[in-house]
Length: 79
Image (cartoon, rainbow, N blue to C red; front, top):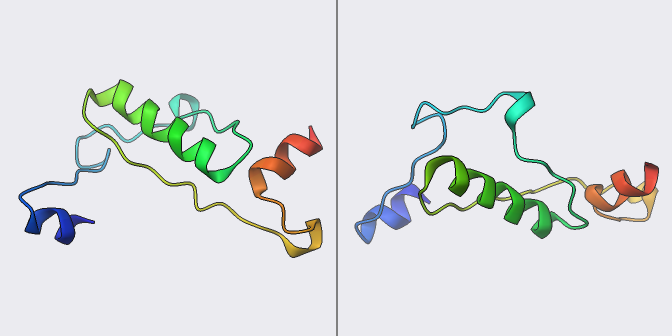
């Protein structure tokens, strides 16, 4: 994303760039049902932490042996 946004005068910064690398204890809670839910939770958490616009992803993991459900859904099903 950096090159794409830079071409339009934008800038991308990671939490590491800002000196705000989270620890496991203070990381965003990923309790969504879908990858999109978790990505939105991460972006909201980053925005709350920095006050800056934020984008996030949750590329997740799909396991064929579990019927291809998203990891987030499987995690909740196993609780």
